[in-house]
Image (tube, rainbow over all chains, first blue to last red):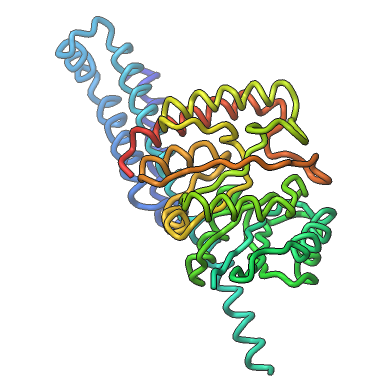
Length: 118
Length: 235
């Protein structure tokens, strides 16, 4: 086994463990953990199975297997970033709605309080 | 009887608010109009909240800073909830003189428009703002012409009168930051009629414009994009 393989295996297993722990502790929601678990899993598989990367690269018509790794990982990271922007937009929308509802509710509450003390 | 709600979005306007409210209370409107004032405190860091509490107004006190669009929309939601016939948006910094209010109402009565905009530029008097700002406003004029097919001169004006239909529509959707030009595209796509009437605006007596020089480029890009997407989007 190559030294780089061992390093990658250790790193990805450690990463996998980190993601697991965060989900268990409730700091990462399951739906966001799926993608991390999936791709770390793939990384682990390919770090054991050397020939696999070459095989897939050949299938895709990519000359250097490393290029396959870079292209796919950058693409996946981009898609995931877009997804996070969508999540942030949704949160902002919900946040605004909640703030407005709360402020309007506060007025009604004050009114009721005043009526009660009268 | 017609109920009008004056919506004043405020972000750090403790200095100018008391005078504005005093001026508003002095405004003479035709008999059938009943005027209520609603101050929206957009999570100011100064004493806007305490100042507003001491005045005879309804205070919408936002728990987080939503920006001008979210603040105005809160007021419009309040207007919808309490069944107001008209809602008038005006800045808290004294830029929009309450004395111009009757002109807006007059324009509404005459035209029956769903939205009346108080415009600085139809008749050129009073405060006309800086060259760059005027350049931007000219740009938006043409952009509006393109997107709404209407000739609106002061599309960035925050001095606006909403009727029931416009209130209902805005309570459902209203843009967040720099909302004025974009909402015009949205309104005209929804089939609302928009009219402009000349008003005289003053220099702001306190506070800061939400559009400052170093963000103005961003402002142009963002608003152009927002107007474009509003134009494409189904209402």
